[in-house]
Amino acid sequence: MDFDLPDSALAVREGVAAVAAKYTHEYWSRCEHEHRFPQEAYDDLAAGGWFGLAVPEEYGGGGQGMLELAVANETLCASGGTAGTFFYITTPGFGGMTISRHGTDEQKARVLPGLATGQAQFCLALTEPDAGSNAIEITTSARREGDEFVIRGQKVWISNVENATWMVVVTRTIPAAEATPRTAGFTLFLVDVKQALAAGTLTYTPIPKMGSNILHSSQVFFDDLRVPAENVIGEVDNGFSVLWDVLNPERILAAAGGVGAADAALAVACDYARERVVFGKQIGSNQALQFPLAQIKAKAELGRLMTYRAAWLFDQRRPCGNEANIAKLTGAQVAFESANQAFQTFGGMAYSQEYPVERLFRDARIGKNIPVAEELVLAHIGTQMLGLPKSY
Image (cartoon, rainbow, N blue to C red; front, side, top):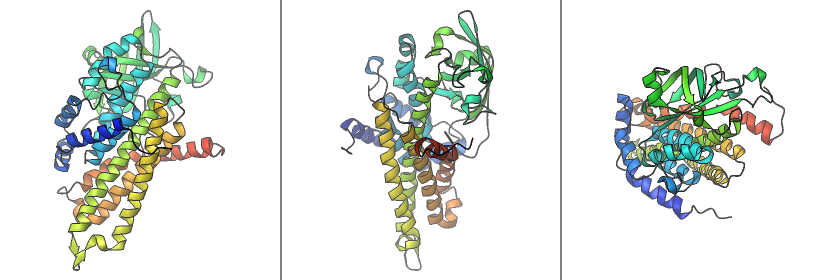
């Protein structure tokens, strides 16, 4: 067993770290406060090809894989740009991986070159008001009319619509009540966002939210949105297998972002614990603070190992659902524990926007709920790995 990262991943870590070092905690906090997309950081990363790592070389990408994407996302988040994890989840994850693996030659030629350069961004439309983690129950429909499909329905908590060039839309071409098995009848589409917005058949409304306000999370409405049949991703009615190849990368990249966010909060906490003197000594010498920080370091390293393992399995095209779920669970938990302990380390000053702790805390909390609630991850582990009976 070789636990050394390949040279390709080490080069990614070094390259992304060099770019990320230009953008301080103050920069990310300012973008968050202004609810402003970090265009400068995004453009800088795009110019270096750091979003096209997993795009095949014939389309202008790096020809690498999920492991390199995970390392890139982890490195960006560790620099302090914790909400920047959405850069990697939405565009290289939802877009690059999905089209590279399941797109037609025409779709690849149309989409991937722009993604490789960062000129094109993506979003995924899956979650619905009455169908969150239970994707089987989605009701957004697509019916065929000649050479087109007509999409009607509503999605919610869709991130990055406002910046997206392309949207991957998950629909039902067979209603859940009529599908046998229940996973049948899913069809995924590639939607030109700007064109649909101009036609008025796609609209969206941003949702006011607690954190990660560098991009919107929105309600999305499809009102007889027409999509050419050539934009089907995979096969009509057989999109569920494609969907899993969307969801596993999402979990892996979320895990990488969580581990990076844990590193960021831990670094901030340790710096403060070394500098802050109370009762004549550095507060970091107090075991009541030191031991929890040490525990978080241990958990972060464990989460990192599982994230890399899940990414490696994905790149080998081997089953990775169990590992992706465990990685997501541990990454999200350690990110929140790290931000929470940083908050405690700073005491009352953590509440001040003078320091990045309050932003790191808000960014970290959502990871326990998305892209899948930790209770459902635990249910997956219990039923799929331990053989226990289902509770739902």
